[in-house]
Image 1 (cartoon, rainbow, N blue to C red):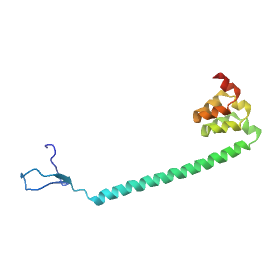
Image 2: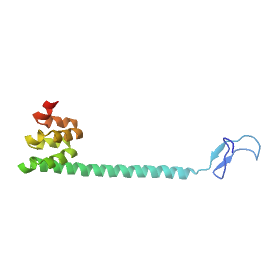
Image 3: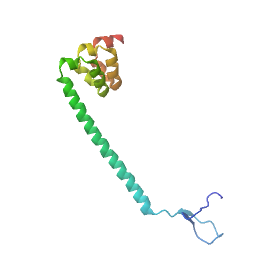
Image 4: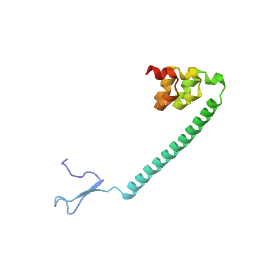
Length: 131
């Protein structure tokens, strides 16, 4: 069990017979297996990237549809605090589509700012004055 000595069938000793000289130790791992593992890793990485792109496209479509509903929503929707809290957690910029009373609500503005700091510009005068 000395250092540097190969054991088992996965490595071989270089020149000479048993006990003659110090040969190099190399793995008998097939280049085909290595190439296949590399190709498999690339295939998995590509598949994950495609799935992430698809999820991103679906998310963007959902966000756009939600923004359209908020922009053209009734006064009841634009004054609903629960809808506002849920919406700004998806996209802080949605704060702009709600009533002044909602934009003055510190909790709603804080949720929007946590999602996107720039959303503070859509907050009412109250949250900005509180500093």
